[in-house]
Image (cartoon, rainbow, N blue to C red; front, side, top):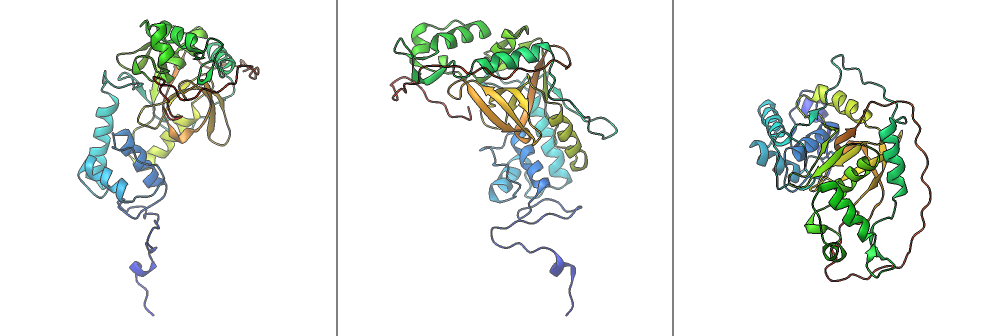
Amino acid sequence: MRVNAQTQAPKEARGSYREPLADEALRRGHGGDRVLELQRALNAAGAAPPLVEDGKLGKLTEAALVALTGSKVLDADALAQLAELQGARTTTVDGAVEDGFDGSAVHHQAPASGVIPVVDSSAPHDIAARAVDYARSQDGSIDPRVRGPDGHYLGWEKLRDVFSDTTGVAVSDKEVQQHNQPLGKAWCGIWAAHVLRQAGADVKWDLSKGKMTGDVTHTVAPRFKNPASYKVERAAFEQSIRPGDVITLNGRNNHHAVVTKVNADGSVDTMDGNKPHVGRGHYQLKDVTSFYRAGAPADATSVPEPIPQSRATRRLSPARGLSRASDGI
């Protein structure tokens, strides 16, 4: 029986996806790492709704590709269009975006040699170590699900003070007592900036632009331009993240979290605000879209383990005027 190249190529069964050939343009039915990179690039360019980054090029990924580039296939023209869209999106500051990106952010690039640097992620500098220590000590300090001694949710006074001190915008007791997102603002980034301030960093949160300002560097993940170099650049970006950094994550609201530990399996442990409470988080480095870093480079300062905190545990029933945020906010 004669077998041609088409017969030898992997077949696309219903609901299955195959790896594209090395020189093959990505199209519907493909799957694998190149598709995953494409989905990340589409999300970074503003795919609406955001795509689930599962490495499968199905109808939703195809629709996003068409909407952003006008092509169903990721060929050279579509790749150039996508790179241009990413550049425009990451260098434009929209004052209406909550917890957005700083237009002056540095875009991460791997070393010219293509060698991924080895970073000791267990050794933050003094500011970072204090940030980790303070963040861990605040576990459960604000919790809209728990009733405090005064009958309002636990930690509303702290949220009021954090909001006012970090943004410079005063909010009333009544506003904070009735709404766990004062003025309708998600406060994960505000709380993260507060942590860095408590550690000694001169930073603030710009409420009008949704970004951290001051003595802080904002590094954005590498743009998807060339599949051959993107993996190296992305790996270098992920390996540069350290405890004490504030990461932003995939999602409509650009959730912010303070890194407390970088794990060998490619994940990070965090402390987060607005979960809707202050609590621990755990994320994959592949989902990090940028990070803020305050102060000096890393040295050998160690990070202490968290001290258990006790608090009231009586749960609140859903109350009128009290908004409930999901873990992804």
